Amino acid sequence: MVNETLLDIAMSHADRLILKAQSGDEAAFNKLVSLWYKRIYNYAYKYAGSHDIAMDIAQNTFIAVHQKIAQLREVNSFKPWLYRIAINCSHEEIRKQKRISGISLDSTFSEDGEERKIEIEDDLRYQPDARLQRQELAELIMAGLQTLSEEQRLVVIMKEYEGLKFREIADALEISENTAKSRLYYGLKHLRSKLSNLIYENQIEKS
Image (tube, rainbow, N blue to C red; front, side, top):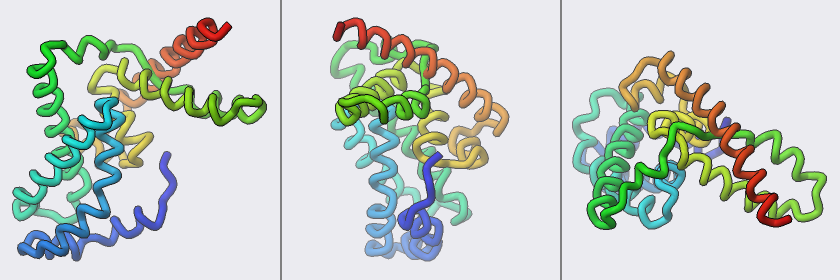
């Protein structure tokens, strides 16, 4: 779970900025973008596994937000509303990349996958090349995320990395909270198994 930071606190008190942005205040909208851009980029990067695609997703997300923010009915629904737009932009960008490359990106998304982050990071403290291994672990986690089904991957990223509440995830994905919890449970279970295999294969390659 992501710990609350000063940025999180600032975002939680952004109602006034949202209201001003809805009334056409461009300076307020730009401040909203500065508050949320990194979070949306991080979500997009973990979703797509590509810096360039994540940049496009983030940019398109805030273009859409600018066009639609006046339609937001409840200010306290901004967070799930924003992520719903980001999810839609992610889908559109992936479809675009498929058309450009002619390669099915979904072929890399099996229904396996997920986690084992905490236990492995604890082990690394006692090993000499901890920094390098943490970098390798981060790469393996990214690879593991890409093996999840899209439904599971979205929930894992939004809950474990973006720190959204189950209610917010449910609103963003338009599913029930129980469905969100179920997808998280199975996603983390699959990721733990997948990462164990990836780490084992990585160790074999080095031996």
